Length: 203
Image (cartoon, rainbow, N blue to C red; front, side, top):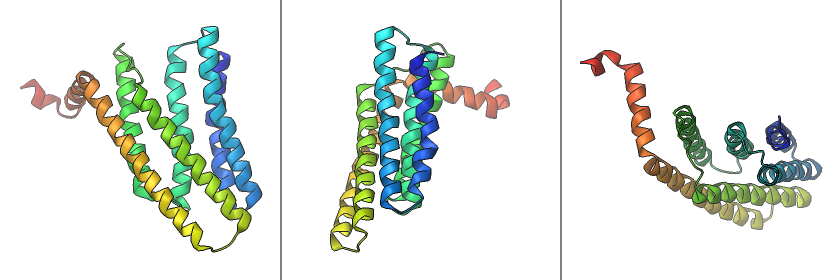
């Protein structure tokens, strides 16, 4: 197994540590959670850099890298939603988008025609990462001052607007993926119909 792939797997393994540290509402634990998240995010840059520099690009690495990003970001966002920091419906929409696109990517890989990650999808991932940073910083500062100040409610409003924007970008990139790979979408839908209703299609 190449070093870039090991870094990708490390990013997945660090995810439960990030989420677990968020469970304790204290300044130290939230700083630790933010620190581990930053380390996990840095592995994303390092594994891509090393893969290109050393020529360790592989189908496994190409599949695992975006999957590791989704696991890290979605798990953290679900933790935020569970503790009431962001709306649950936004995370559900983001998760549904990633589930659909991942299924499409798996099908395209199986067909031997991999889906190429678009530039807008990278912006989507970047916006989600930034959103997680902002929310974590909010939690760290709030835990440090540990006071019920009106300014915190204003920040919660800003965070809600930011997450609405991130959700919108996520949906738009999903529509772009589906349109650009509509031949895969149509083929996948026909394959599902053959499994679910083989008799009707045979007529």
